[in-house]
Amino acid sequence: MSVHAEVRRISVPQLTARKGQQKIAALTAYIAPIARLLDEHLDMILVGDSTAMVGYGMPDTLSITTGMLTAHAKAVVEATRQVCVVVDMPFGSYQESPELAFRNAAAMMAGSGAQAIKIEGTAALAPTTRFLVERGVPVLAHVGLMPQYMNVMGGFKAQGFNDAVAERIVRDALAHQEAGAFAVVLEGVTEALGRRITETLSIPTIGIGASPACDGQILVTEDILGLSGPRIPKFARQFADVGSIISGAAAQYAREVREGSFPGLENCFGVKK
Ligand code: KIV
Picture (tube, protein in one colour):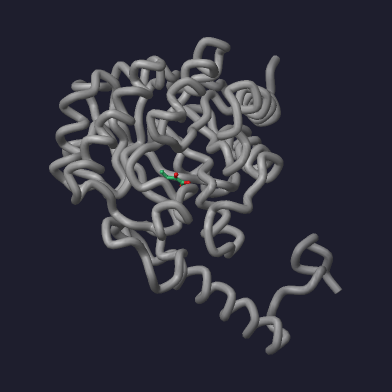
């Protein structure tokens, strides 16, 4: 008899089929304990390169590696049974050529068990999306505000206020759809643009700071739990203050250790002195 609990994951085509039916609820997770808690509530977990900033305290997402994200994705896959797990491809691991992108995507999926990868990019990256999808790698495309392009964009800036940029983002999303992406993450675009792209595409849009009209939403879990420090993005909402709970527990533990009231070995193993 198998000792493993049954794994029945939402598949990539099932996510695509949600368009016009039911909104996709997605969050990020990087470690097993958080992923385990999210599993029964969500449709998709993204092992995002945002962990560079949220988990490692790096100033941006550019320095995280395929090895680091593969290890995080493996932990998330092993801790979940139901959600579709998507892993971000890090900066530098896919932009150079479709062949490099495939090698890295295949290694990340094989090394973690993730069902799909996410890449950021304008229409210039659509041939890479096609190359990957035709070789068995489902692609979630990420357009609009693309954190890996922060040095080109001049920071983390909302996009689409200018008509030319808005038109380009529509073309980017359509190009990835044409190339076979199963859904598109729309980050940091005006509400009007988010709505327009959602109405234009036949695949789901998953918004983050985009528009409530999107076919789904994604946020960084630490932002909704109060674990990201005092500054959270304007579009995020803090649903719980887990930071205070952790801090309170640590304070009580430290107090008990210092007072000598923290239980000793005899209480743990039922050994009486
Ligand atoms: O890295 C990430 O967490 C992301 C999402 C916030 C969309 O790309």
